[in-house]
Image 1 (tube, rainbow, N blue to C red):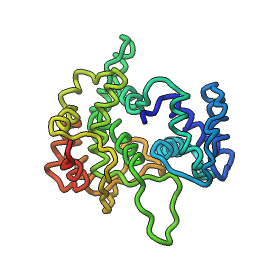
Image 2: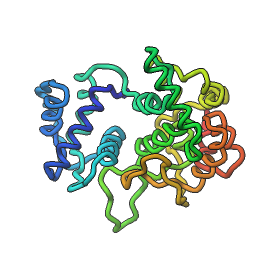
Image 3: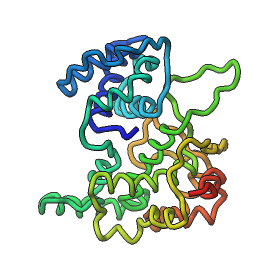
Length: 288
């Protein structure tokens, strides 16, 4: 299911509304209210035939929760999503058509990594790129944006299993492992294609990681278990880290640090062969 920009906007608005109103659960009524407020769309009979009760989980719902919580100054409540919302997701996307959801493109534009369509935007883009290139911790504008994309990919993966007797945190994903880094590299190319955008010429040679992976037959996995890495690192998102962001594994941090000085996805993919990254290695071995 390819999420649309309007559908993603409504999901974030629904979570924000439920959180601020201290709702115990995010049900279809909250989603309908959010659609009316955020997009001016009346979603009558959404999930009308669905009688799912209780709570549920889905990748796009975990992601919506993460975006809202990392942008919120306070977190008064942490409501779970209702099972009926999960069941109605395909219908919600169908009823909210629009441009494909490509959040990485917005991040890339903010850091000056995309070819812009106006002269003023292009000038601003070049200035941002130069400023970030000079910052020691940045690793290049593309990697600045890709850090959050790696976190997003971790949110999209199935959450880690909860040990017996332990309390589960609603809507959480897993740590940013080397598999999430690899998936972020693939996602970069996919979102550029969906959004019909290009990286600035100055950054293309250093960011051919997606092409390198495709040449090896690597594709975004579907319907397979993506392996986890347990050992966590002290690393955080270099720019704008929040408590809502997932931790990094030592393997993912090692891959990133090995490539950061060069500043691109080309070097991230090459670094996979230089450090111990078992989760990424397992994905590389999957048939294309």
